[in-house]
Amino acid sequence: MNIISRRGAIGIGAGTLAAAGAARAAGREDDPIVVVSTWDFGKAANAAALARLNAGGTPLDAVEAGARVPEADPENHSVGYGGYPDRDGHVTLDAIIMDEDGRVGAVAALEDVVHAISVARAVMEKTPHTLLVGEGATRFALDQGMERTRLLTPAAEKAWRDWLETADYRPVANIENQLPGPPGSALNHDTIGIIARRSDGHVAAACPTSGMAFKMRGRVGDSPQAGCGLFVERGVGAAVSTGVGEEVIRIAGTARVIASMRAGMTPATACREACEHIARLRGEAIRGLQVGFLALGKDGAVGAFALMPGFTYAVTRASGAAEVLPAASLFAEG
Ligand code: SD4
Image 1 (cartoon, helix red, strand yellow):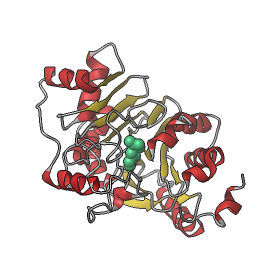
Image 2 (cartoon, protein in one colour):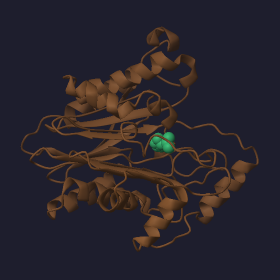
Image 3 (tube, protein in one colour):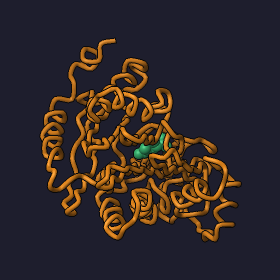
Image 4 (cartoon, protein in one colour):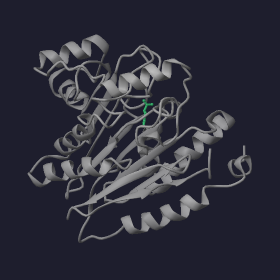
């Protein structure tokens, strides 16, 4: 399948923009990139992560601190508190955290606890396991002293009730960057993937989400699965993904990005290669769907790429200077 001819054009506009953005985000040894994350709201998360690094925290501490920002934000309808529920009205959270020592912890379909990323970290540090799901994950979190919280806010409940009128499950591309819209406009997915890098090149990453809005009860996406929503490898770097998780899982997306970087590709080229692979594999089935990858190399090089225009990522430097950049895309539009 020829990607270019199938849709008539590659995302030239977005690609040009992103190329300029990538140029701005590169280099600068005097002020290296230390935190990157997905979407516009990543900027606030990056600031919290940087503050943690500056206070002597590890990259793992930093990504946890960063991830907790959107998790606690009721206006963010895709991560944590205020997240949109599944089709039965339950907010269920997925999250993963990983460092370059192969330490990894995750939760899936977690309910009633705001900071899924901290539960994931506790799974990593306090159990012999890597992933706890559902009721067991909630019980573990409560045993750890975490508070039980009703995650379904009135706004999210209203969106769900409105959605029930049509019950049409259709992922909306780039919904992460849209303000809460009118009933039915929304509301499909959202995630933060965040990567921190210390001056010695040590990296860690985290990826919490409430997953796809109005998903089937029990559905788990790419985010909490190592090698899908996130992957970290010593001597290479880290990668995170966002968008329709099913498409990422099919290709073990972030494991693929890291393998490409290990083989010598830049983060940007590796992210692009993963998108091209999805497109070749899936053809028309991914029309209108968004997937974005973001990667940070051990040397501080950053790269991102998406299927469609609209995927943005936040880059923060050691000085605190931060910017949100558009990623280049494979297609000009859905
Ligand atoms: C999922 N990948 O559950 C997540 C959703 C997402 O931005 O990334 N939204 O499939």
